[in-house]
Image (cartoon, rainbow, N blue to C red; front, side, top):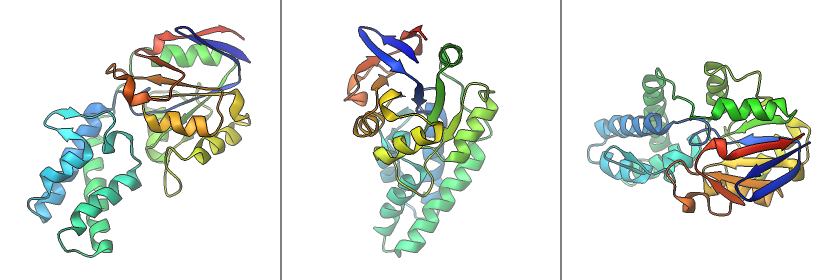
Length: 244
């Protein structure tokens, strides 16, 4: 067990730490913005006029991406369903709409994924410090499990990460069942597990699962994006491992 301190908040008897991926460990803003833009263009090519409303729904305005917007925090399935709803408004059937949305986002991802997103500053350092303290470390992301595995492999994080878990066809954040499943996979109880994430969904999920605590990180310095956190930080180096 370890004691972890962030600013003036201390978490004791910690056995495991779960990280979100996008916006927490991974600087994925450019990737997500490009994914949404390309997906919207592909859909607009089939259904002219739908591109701009889709971009707004995704949380994309020009070259800016809302860190709390749909494409930033939702699962792939939720993004597909949201896009399909806009397509269905044009009079197309639901299954056709869903197929168009899924195909567009899959094609966009194949093109965009050729350039993986970088780690945020301090990611390797905090993973190393937690690992040296004997803590179990997992990634619990709204991205697909395949994306999480690709992220861990690309950045060579397998020595630190014991669990790579995404959202596929099942529940999505903030459903606490995801946190409970992650804890079960790691072999730890929620009350000894910390959540570190960049969204309200991360905080709500962990709180409802009765986690040891929630650390909200906001690289853009907007605390409202992590409402419900026990402590809010702006850099990963604000997390200190005091002892083990």
